[in-house]
Image (cartoon, rainbow, N blue to C red):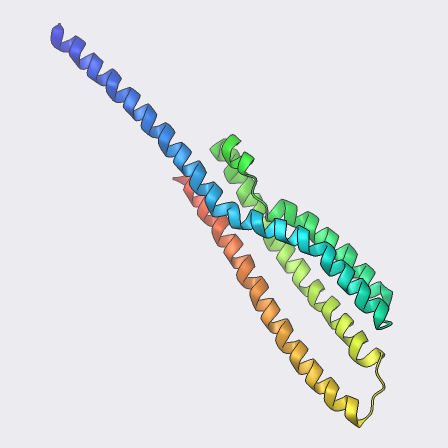
Length: 191
């Protein structure tokens, strides 16, 4: 009888230790997930801060260079829409990581990843088209075409082309990193 009581006590001690270990592992996982998603939340905050500056810049350029004001208005509308989508697709709330159960958080991350993919597919071509419209209006619509400006136009298009390619690559790298981070968080939740 004594051995049975002692065995039960040892089993209770093991259960308590296992429960403590599970709680510690869950807290550790939550902290790791918060750390992994912190850069995305920081990027979103940065975009929200920079957006008004960019909008004022585009309106200023349009006003000073007598460029079509619809370019700036289109940029404003697209920037607001894209930032609203970024709120849904980029930001991973630390509160959600802490409070949602594993299955709900996993579903949210998967949905966020899909929406980010769609946003990337739609917003990238639109941003490139807007940039081309803006550059066209700056270079061709506002300058007389003669021998001197033709050389300048070729140089300008070359520089702008390089900038657009580099910007597209940077955007893709950021997008890919976001997708990778989301997949890592999803994989953590599956384990």
